[in-house]
Length: 395
Image (cartoon, rainbow, N blue to C red; front, side, top):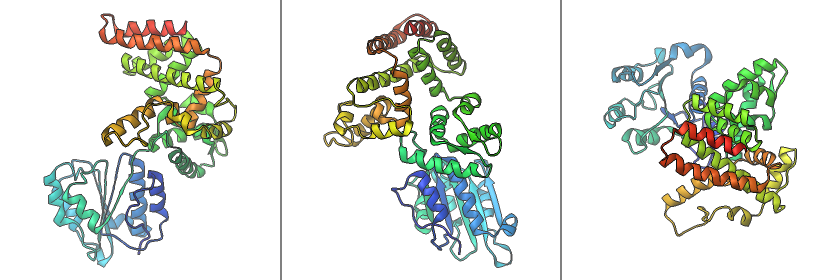
């Protein structure tokens, strides 16, 4: 019997589910497995590891069939799920991103083809999106094993801790190490997509060489920032009054297809964060320390009453609004409240805020808010208006 887990535990985080999928001691074998969700790396890696436990190493090339992509025909799917294994052994059909849930008709056509427990065939299905209301999903959940891997959140500390463990395991074979602070810095630049992170870390590992440590300087030198990280770099250049750097970053964002209105929104968000941190520092609630771990500990000790003061309606404590409104409030809280960000974001904002007078930040925010209205109703080119705004903000 192959080792793999039982039914999905809904409380697990995406990486915890991945880990439990690898480490569980359950000996039950299911005729059908469905792995799906936005985190494609965990979906595919979990499927590969499962198949390796279902079929012994030497037999895998003869007892595994992989069908990939939405162009796979119903006839090919039928052939993969009904071809019996040789010599009474075991056989796995991996249906990889075939779009089996794209239409109700296609989903229903697959129902009679799902393997029975004693036929020697195991179906492994991986998709990004599934329709949980479909009869196909319900039948797979009834007879088999279903697990969803949602995208990781860069504002969830538990996700980032588990991400660090996963990344450390992956790069251990290259005899390279990375610190938590450096990984958090990388996440701020490229996001939490694991495939992207591992690709960038592999690039940095080649630069560091065997036995080396990936440093923040390696990240700055080799990693291409995502667009919203570039917007934060623009805000940092403005905060420092560095006009040449601010104009260079602005030009880079626009050349990558960035929208001027979106850049203004990112500037407003960053300046709000700087103002919030400045007020907290002025009140003695948080203090800058050069060590990120000690800063994160002090941030975690901020009273709940202070956190609540930064937004009028706390979605998790209100019983007077609908579920949809609570979700919108929570998204707004995450977007505009410094306590809704990962501690590393607050750490970097605090570092940038130390040398900026609070009155300057208030004037900058007023100017950005006014510019937002001008952009939406003005007759000038948005690019020219953005350039004038950046120049004015740099003083």
